Image (cartoon, rainbow, N blue to C red; front, side, top):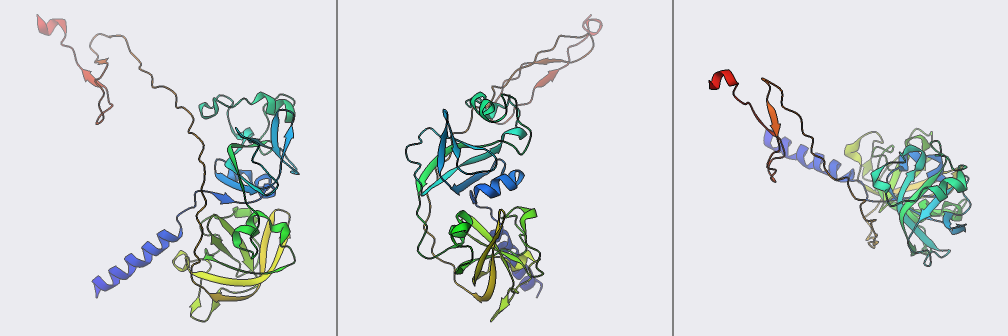
Length: 301
């Protein structure tokens, strides 16, 4: 009996761990980036927005705060393009950060902060940006709602996604939730959206929004898309169990990792009666220095 219970617990724990595996990228909107920069800081993101030139720079169009796009090739950024890259709040960085040794910040500072280093939550950039042409699908999906909610506001939709409880895995910014008693998050591919107005239970399932053990179940939700500020959600009218869809993989070009600073060696002078560090022979198995205590002159005599 104990073995059976142990096996059941192992399976359930494994399912919960699989449900919380994070995606490599987050589909969102420029409005959400500006509203919750701490959440997206340092993450791979994708947004759907036109890119406009500002002098020698590129910037996402129609944002309340500037989001600069650092890309080697701007020719492929059409109106229906997805802009992908690593999002950073410049005010949360140190100017001497070696990860950005190849980034010339001065044009950005001149254009947005009078040449000064900006405060937090004011000026942003997308590093290693690439663009992929991506028209919206004929049938709405969670990913389409996450990238372009303005196209669906007030319209009826039916989408399929994985139940993630009350944002238990931080698929969305923590402060951007709705206030309903049974509100939960649906997630699919690299996108997620809040669902409100309905309890997550139906034929064959009754899910707890605060239990990770219940996450991972695929559901089909129908309702109307609503939006307030940067937050979009589905005001649901029906819910049912569903099978996992077959998602088409999306290729992502990852930026080249910045060079790391070279390691340094520190030498110290010899002091009487104390051990003297000597330069160690480094190997793959050990990188620690070896200490040798030299015999005193009295002992040698």
